[in-house]
Image 1 (tube, rainbow, N blue to C red):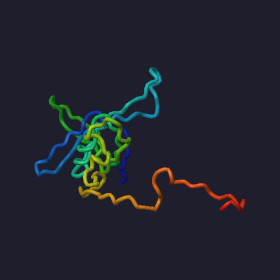
Image 2 (tube, rainbow, N blue to C red; image 1 turned 120 degrees about the horizontal axis):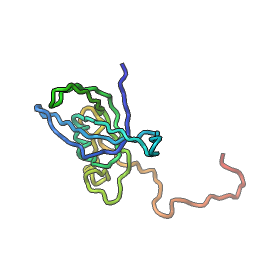
Image 3 (cartoon, rainbow, N blue to C red; image 1 turned 90 degrees about the vertical axis):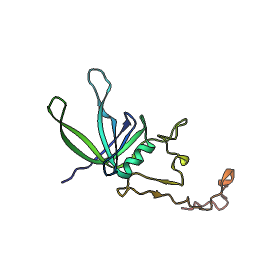
Length: 166
C-alpha cells in the first residue's frame, strides 16, 4: 500500500527532543500548514495544525537546526494512533512520521545559531537530516571552474565578423 505525505509549514513551537529507554532520539513538533482556500465568511486562510514525529538522526537534526516559526518541508507517512484520555475515553490522533525534513526558507539576518543553518551553524561543513541511517552527509568543496572573481568576470565580445555564434 502507498502511504506518503509531503507537507510544508511553520513550526508552531520548538521541537521537543526526548530519548526512548533504549536511548533512541525522538523529536516531536507541530506544523502550521495553511490551506490553499480561504474561509468564506472571514476571508482568512484556514490553518491545519499537524503533529510530526521524527526519529534517530532526523530527530537530532530537527532539534538542532529548527525552532519556532521556521519553515519546514516534511516528507513521511501518515500514522493513526489510538489512545485513552484521563477520563477513560478512547481517542484517535493523526501524526506524520517524518522520513526527511528539509529547510523551507532561507536564513534570515539576526537569527541565532539555533534555527539557522548558515556555514557557521554546521561546523566542519557537515549536516544531518533526511538520512535514515542517522549519519552525516559531507559537503564537497565547491568546484573551481576557473571563473575569475570580482569585476573582471565579464569581458566584451568582439563583433568584428558580424556572425552570431549559434
